[in-house]
Image (cartoon, rainbow over all chains, first blue to last red; front, side):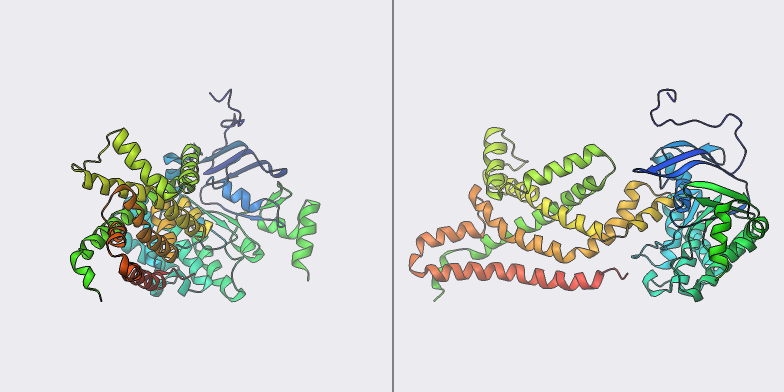
Length: 261
Length: 222
């Protein structure tokens, strides 16, 4: 079947690297724009990978391909050894194991904070209601918004909303968390409260893919920095190496623009 | 002045109008929601069916649909919808025609409501592992309904007045009684019109006011 597939689903690579998240030779186009070009990336269990790069470099798209919010044109993506299925029940099951936090929070506006955090447990995991509520309260406490449980998202500040969004994702007990520019829509004084929650999460051993412009977070929390430019991974290094001694010209140029002003 | 009314059962006629409105209103809401779900579904066949249905039925005059149910379904194909006698069958056919027609407007109102729900919320729901049906029924439609209560009130008011078309297939509702009275009471013809206009205002005005209030109550804060 895969031999005649027109989508060029390459199947698993010959020497499949073992990792929690594996991307192999991933390509994607938006019309004429080749937004992801031959992306190879393997993320180990417990690893925190920060993806940085200039606007339009494809980093958000890369993040969104991992749970197939963006389908890819060709290549192979697997999570915990299972290749991403096509749209349907299997994909929904896999997405439940992948937490996602968005730039715009995307909390459900007609549900309270508590309902936002219990919804996935009740409707996807089929958890008992009392257990789901207890779990949700624990998570809300962990991200520091326990006293806001009965409010609606519009009554919360941006920083509080984003922390609720993190709790909502954690409630599914995910194997990996994806953060798509989680602090880009926040006022400056609210960025730290969200970053602190993410730092704590990283220390607790959560596998994380974080697309961000927060270089401080990349330095302190990341195991690895992935630098993207023009749809390619231009450089991969430890934070220390990357920030003090970038190898690629593109990364040197990028860092000179953001670090000295 | 209103002595002539004594020989007619005005309440009986308006009661039929009210029943037509209630049954058709509920039916249109259900069928319209199903059509809206089809129009936003990821399945191309369903989208095509929804679009074709809306564009065909919405652009057909209600009188044509009404007469088609009577002459086509009943007299040609003997479909009685379990009506038994001819007056009950006529009533059911009229409800069917009203549902078929007004579901289009419910669907299109609802679709504009669906567009007010930020696409990110649907993405977040999918990312949690909810199915398309769950995303629609738990996240999208509840918010869509809240934002279209006022437009749906317009549809309900139009539906209430459009029940008069049922007179064309012999349903004895308000407009049918009115044409009888117009024939028999030609000396007070303006009064006859005024009585029926007032009757319909009594039905539609409270509906508009009530749903206007509901609309403000249930609006989703963003």
